[in-house]
Image (cartoon, rainbow, N blue to C red):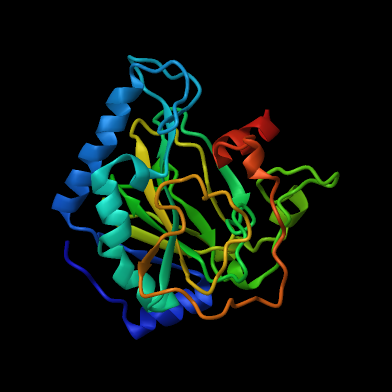
Length: 288
């Protein structure tokens, strides 16, 4: 797998805006292999009536019309995803943005099925898996062409430098999304919809506000996601403890000191209690 380094202008844009879109970065043959791996999960889902550890099903799923929400922890469930996420070309990009000592945190393959792939309300990531600082980032890979009708990810440019939400309602209940009041304060002129051809890469900082609409098109929109952090960003929950490859160092070495951001990070519910499966289920339960 060939690699590509970021330019100084791209690094500066990420620092200022909190995101990057690199169109068609991953080669067609690598995307083909990733799609083949993805299809193995889709085919396996046809035999399922309920979600499994490696496949989270969506509403209306059937053998005839598979409706997947997510393959969680992709690197733990398929050797190609493991190779791509832990040793692939993404690491050079990550190093350009957060430095040479890199910890892999988690991965997932999010689906938006045609004619019903669910909305993801505006949110920030870091509250789901707090770290000691706000340097973690997530890299996404579009496995199909994604246009405006296919529910691309939307980000509010520069919002990583703005307020950090508790992702809770006025009564303190976890919702996994910004409140209506918080969302109303976002600047529409800063919204960017990240469309691109298959193989395009999205990169977003852990506290940028982002989300996506429901997919009402007739095409599936799979987005492969990997989250990385510098090794001096220390995870503050143990959510990844039982997961194969969770929090493994993939480049460089461990930090000699933890680095703490001056702004404290809101904490999520206790995921160790087994009451969380995905942002899809969290947000949709609150919606309906």
